[in-house]
Length: 321
Image (cartoon, rainbow, N blue to C red; front, top):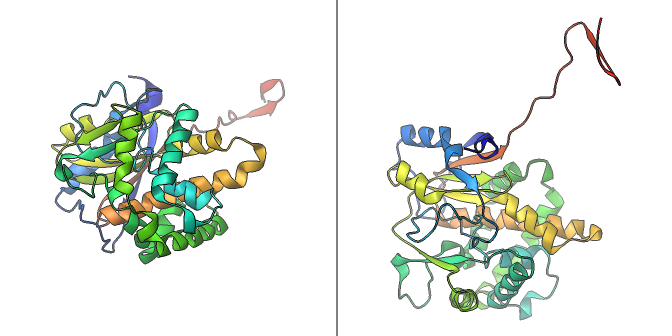
């Protein structure tokens, strides 16, 4: 197995929250022993992404048709899910005349223009439902912004933990201000959002998966190792149905550079990444009760070489004394 895929730092950040979040997905029925083993073995389930594989959602449920030797990265809501981050962080047009459906269609266009394979999913639980698609990041997107506001302390803590030194308090506050405006226009802005997967499917046949079964995610894994992603089916099969939410945050960074490539667009790149991480955390707040374990998967830190004892470092190399 490629060592660059499996040799990553796994950082256990504990439970998402000690408070009760509004979502129903819970990890309380999963034993601590299984969670600990899953965390310990997590690197075994990361594989290299395939460039032309469709973008996947963070959902950990079973996809009966996915080829786990041909996986795309995971981001909340697949391709349409990036639309809200673009609205909050980049688009300076008035929210009064905007709709999520139009924003999502434009984001699908951006995916296509820049060579990112768009994708999304439905589920079997909501088959035939007139106003739902079975993707929590889309079905619940109208309550996601409200969840962000209702649990601000948790939200800011987790966003800051994910972004580390790249967290900017000023940018965070600006994105919150934009989220407040969207929340005020929520009913109108998000109306008809369920149609976006029909549009995606018509434009890119085979891009929309149908996931099976119920949620059983016990982990939230934020993956920062570029060009790698979680083999979700194999993970759940190994741990007797226990699932993991997987967010490949490296893809959000990659998208920001591709969609906003100019040197003078650094502020907009920061805004987009901040908004994408903020909406991801808010999505988890709307979907879960906060009991999942938060894991950061980061590139392996290589210790700096230390001078040998009784030696001196010079431009020519090490000189023994």
